[in-house]
Length: 233
Image 1 (cartoon, rainbow, N blue to C red):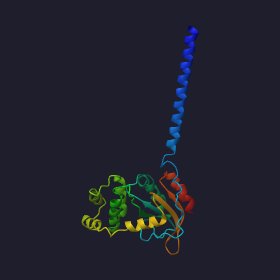
Image 2: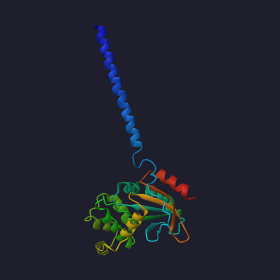
Image 3: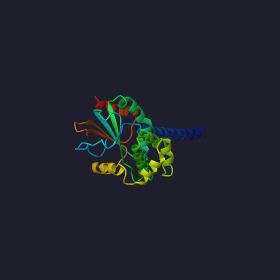
Image 4: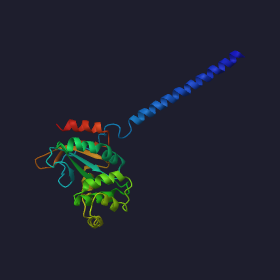
């Protein structure tokens, strides 16, 4: 009887050990999966080709010296979670290290996606802010509030950015008086369907940008630094 009991105990212990082992494997797989989550690694190489024609940036909102030799272009959506991550966690440090130092100019272009209900309204609001010379103020506020960008909230956010609300209201009501449609048309021509999409290139003698690298998605600050350092020399 004792031998039988000991045998049952041994088999029960084997079952427990097996369950524990399976649990460890599952946990390990979860850790590996999380380590590859969006935003933790380098941005992805895109499915679109590098543009053969130079990209114009004179009509875009630019941070930094327009005469900077190297240019980083972002096609973004104010309601896009990855764009928001970049704006909150990566852009401020890149601005300090590369843009404020004159190594790089950063050009913002609009690509509001149809899956985001408030993206187009936010893009038009940002364009109206640009007309008052306060694009970057509203840019930070919009991404800070994202995804809560109901059009009823936009005047309040515009006021936080220091905009003249009368001018803002007039501009917002004029659907044709903005650069959003122009940027969307350019993005469509380039085959862009994902935000954020980043293009890095060198400014040519004509003032347009010869694109050399295209990436999509948001990675870590260190990943962006490696990409920029490999280009800006």
